[in-house]
Length: 75
Image 1 (tube, rainbow, N blue to C red):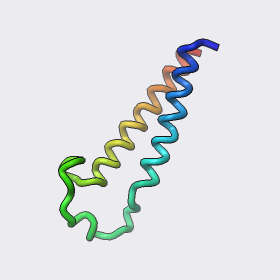
Image 2: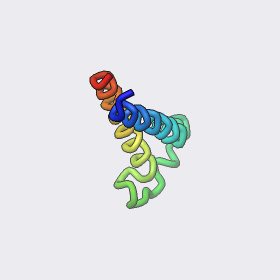
Image 3: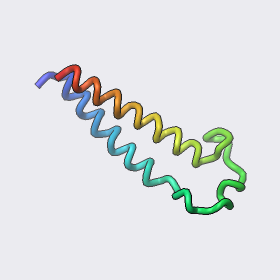
């Protein structure tokens, strides 16, 4: 097996686990309006922690698709 393919497969598995982890950390949309009116922290930008979780999930989703394409190209 090609070493590059092995590296991409390992990264693919790590990104998949990370995506599942960050999706499960998010609160459901039915949580109500009170969390959205609370003051957000400066660590994740103006949207608070939820915005940071959504942004991280989106980045990991993009990496997941990119790695899938790279794995297809290499194999």
